[in-house]
Length: 232
Image 1: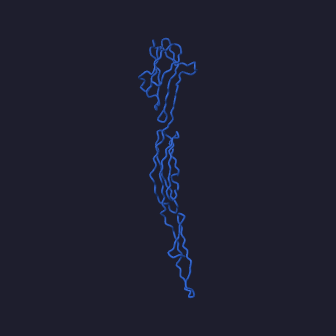
Image 2 (image 1 turned 180 degrees about the vertical axis):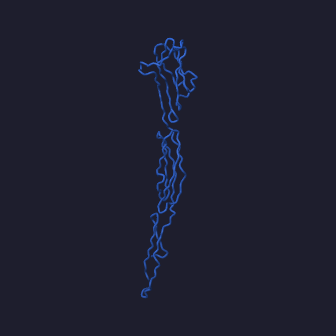
Image 3 (image 1 turned 90 degrees about the vertical axis):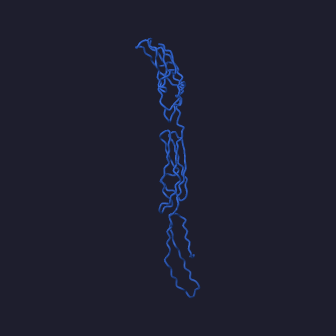
């Protein structure tokens, strides 16, 4: 168990026996109270017997996020040579001991994500947009959180306002999102080229002289319109 996963268990089954001069009783104790109190006490015999200890009696064991150690202590030996053994259990067949009702709860806590504030920039020179760099941040109770974006940082954003969604996904696929806007203003004026100065010779047989003129213009964005003080 750790901050990402929680551990719970309901019972411990263990096969115990003792030699004739070994402990007469056994107690299960937990590291959660520094092995200070007995969770259960059983009487031992020289015959292998299956005992069941109720782990729900251990305060703090259920949904534990810290490692827990269980110890079995023997009491009442009449000789220093007396021993207590954890034995194989014949029915159902198993080796030594068994923990029932184990539940390892997965991480259900979503990450916390923080987006940058709304961003406003001018267009890049001769570009109908701007390359914009940004970064959201995220924290989580478990490692492995990844942040993705609807528009990649450093990509070119068009003129106008674009909403960006940042998504934080942790290792257990818990998801949190936030949004901000990127506004790119076109501040680059178009470049215009006028024709050279024009001189017309008067034709005394005509009442007016007609001449067509045309200027040209380029810009970083499409849609430039040329107008004249005097129509061509």
